[in-house]
Length: 336
Image (cartoon, rainbow, N blue to C red; front, side):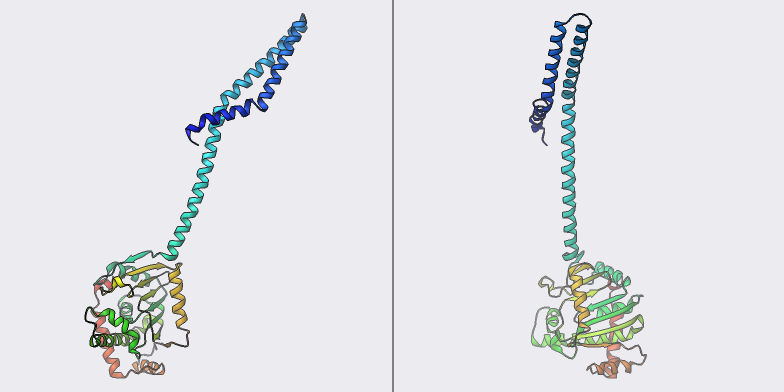
């Protein structure tokens, strides 16, 4: 309520008080007093004094009531204005808080809690946050083209994860990694360069499988799921949050390590990826196997053979040595 509106409001309040019920009561009191004065004028002695005293008391009471109303009108107006303003402020504050809660909920549902720009070298902040999530998680989903960094991370960090599920491209289907091969080539995307990049990615997948066997004791269960048409983006899902690395982002095409985002567990992105990854491990259209815990590498070769993957002992040794060399050469930023 503005100050310019105060005089008109006060005038309206006075009219309500004096012109209506209060005014009528004041008029009746005044008429009664006049009548008593008239009676006192026609009588004499004690009767005249009585009627004069009664009329004077009525006039004094009416005058006191009138002045009392005049004095309290401003206070009542101030109280009323303050009460209305407080009520309006409370309603606005409540509505604003509701809007803010809705915005916060939408942010957690659709907006990442952290973003990491694309780089040509491992991002220390990204790896630090990811390693902290990994250390606090009992379950770990990986979805990508190869899992060499993921498996090497598990091998190098002094932690254990109860259940590891890894989703990668099928190494028996080279066409499944063509899009990623094109991303890894800087300029000359000739057929020969794409074929070379594709062969390297296939080797990295085999290296990831053999590396997972080497770290079998760091988890109660390690499962693989192979896709003939895998998504190019990489998702790493933990108990309370997930990290999404966007190889499909055109702005990240020139970076070795594309831009990434972090989403909380109650976000829509997390729920979609979690359910999709879990579904792949029950789909009849995917190739799945579990890393054996036997110390004899022949157990791994037999497991792969039953899944339709041919890997002989010399190849196993080659990929084992390649994985160990890769793990030892990892930049320190990935392990922090």
